[in-house]
Image (cartoon, helix red, strand yellow):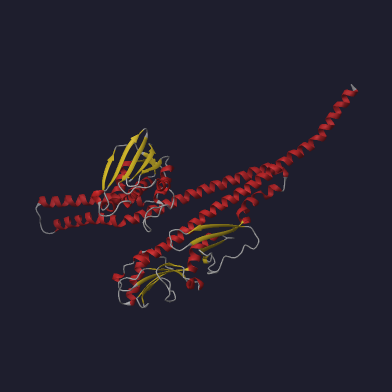
Length: 513
């Protein structure tokens, strides 16, 4: 018994001695696991930051490109036929045209004669010199002096020439600075790496400074759509990219007892970052869709005005006929009936315009797809008439759950895309065909055209953002990408069938409500 009791006591002593070692091993294992998790969390935070920087650089590059494209369009297309000879009147005339071309107030526009005499000017003042050619110019002298990017159009028959100057300092302060962040830096550089615009407004004409020994995250995005090579460069320190993650786990690293809690906090932090990233992406997609919707309305504005002007003239003429003299009762009744029909036509157009212009609230509700297609055809009617005849086969189909404005935007973009693929003035030779049917519990709509079609390589990329086969100045390259975003967000799909020389057919499949 004594030997048995001694052995039991020895086992208990050994167990008590082993417990601290076991606990220490557990704690060390947990700390190692936590350290690994912290490292992964920091790496994930840096990767997320890089993704956000790429998105921010791309957005800034698009804004710079849009600003310069507007300047290029103004310089190349401004009709000087109505330019007054009086300088004060000419300045006011040019200022009104600047507003019409949506040029920022800090962008200068001017008209010069053949002998470089200033005929009109609007916007911020700029110093004169006579060394510019035509097109978008990275003039070394202007950049070295910190002046402007210069855009010049071709001289007209009278030798008059339009020049638009984009202030480099204002370009930096107004567009580049918001992208720099609190501790970062942002630049627009030319093909040689020299600074054209910066967040601080300085260092123009020089190269970006060295990093100074610290690890730096650099993001670069090309400014597309211009003949001159420009790029956006964003800088941020590596510590800035992961500072939030390091601060979030610093307290937990000080205490082994809170290792598991800190690990859970790190995971939650990453999930919050992922959620914020998803929310930011969704917000960016909605903003892009809204911008495309407003751009589409702008393209159709002249046609809608024309469509409203005709019935408005009918209403006016009918009411004047009834109001002047005493026409026979039958003639007066017929005139008033004409006025009523024209007023109903205007009301219908205004309802369509309201549907497209309304800011979407992205709340899904049952929507009549047939009505959306008919509304899109009415809105684009004036733009289609010179391109093709329109045929429709629209069956009665179940409603789908969608935001009415977003769904209408899809079909309007597809109709305009089909019209842009066709040449002007040959409407009898071309056709835009729209069909709608219910297939196996889904609603299927197709928009087909008899245009030039696409190669398989082009068709494979047609839904990519900013990919376009249209000439510069026509479209944004976002319309079909936004169509895909909206359709997939509704649980549907959009595809294209096309062969060179045989037109294209876009097919939208949506689940019935």
